[in-house]
Length: 634
Image (cartoon, rainbow, N blue to C red; front, side, top):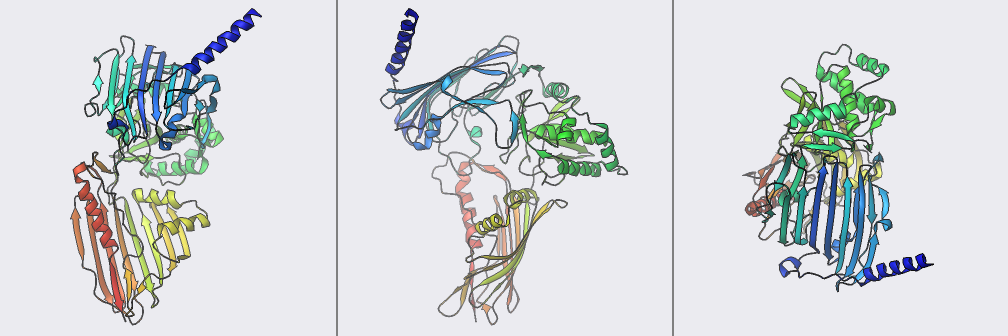
């Protein structure tokens, strides 16, 4: 009975104490409050590495949420796995007066698998609590502690992590044992007046009073524009395996010996099958192409994240037996098959995605989110994306182009760069012919061939769609045409020529507008119109980025209605700018036929903010020329 009463009073005092707690809201200056959807009041991350096999991460954060646009900040997600444990986790929610609304303990969080739709299995999990603010403003106070054996990944510091979120105070501290060397990436610290502590142990950064950033059109990736710090140590532990890396060469040796070596074994039947497949072929590129097609026909991609931090590929023999694997497994499997054929290749790690992100050379450590294959031959190099059955052999597109990658060889690792594609390589050519009738209706046929990054733009937009979805997508593409009807739609993934091709036959009503005098008014460029103009920005702060250049060439044959002639042609345009080139001509072929020829080249680059108005003028001129109209009379 005494134990029961004691327990009752302890529970009562605990809940009474937590309910009685009040949050004292610090003053938020108007310079930070204005335009902010939320403000981070306090953010403290303290990392203590006891030794190379043990690290504690303690995080404390308070945020005030002002409106529904920042409501997602009320949700809390903390990840863990077999080698990472969540030891403490508590969240408190307060109203604007500082009164506590509720407290959520670790036991009240949902424990979920941290896997996506394409993931087959994973040992990554997360503790999740979702909350919807009942009224604004709304304060969230989070505190958690993580203990991990994985010291290969030290949490990064990016105190300004979203647009329209202000910051009062952020602190990041890293304590580490003597004898370790720390590699680091630091960006934009002076620009934001980040205070750095003493240069050695502990490493401390603090940042105060940052107004919310406004996202500007064509802005660089946020982590390129705000304070960013990432650390790595030269001796580390990854899911039960110790490592050492004072250089990229040494890290490559470790990855090869501990992650890849011995994973290339294949059963004798498959070895013989590959030898028969390439029998009589001397050219290593032709051998590689045969094997690449073999892998595409035999395997499919699924995500797997288990084992050594999700970094060790499953053995090639297992992929061969099952017929599936993730990027690591399929890359390693393809490499094993190429080894059988006597074609050297190298496992390569990359930050993949449409946004170009480099492996950072100054921070020796495990980086990247994807694996693919490097096949050197002569003075050239092939790059093989082993996870996609649709891509051509040797194709480099927007997923892995123009960035630093980490190549792993038996002798060690090194940073190399994937090729940057020129506008002429990112080429789309459109040959079209259309007829106008006296009622202004249009019938036409269009032939499109796209290469480079324009190839994968069309491939991932259209390939694999059923007829209904394909027609819907094309209607959006040609939304400027009224009463649109398709008589023919043919899409071809021409892998041999690394081209995506379209053949379209269509009808559109009321394209040319009848005038009171019986003439017809219409826009000459009926199909591939380049009309994008970036929004106006007053007093732009950030540079703007044209990530990839491209080239479009369009040639249209235009048939006028019988008995009509053009009332003057368009003036010829030859416009050369630092941002690109535009040429356009409209010529008379015969009494009823016009030839329209347009070339547009957009150049890639990063430009200072003061050039943004010039870029807008450039795009406005292009749009004006693209929409030029002519009148035809009987």
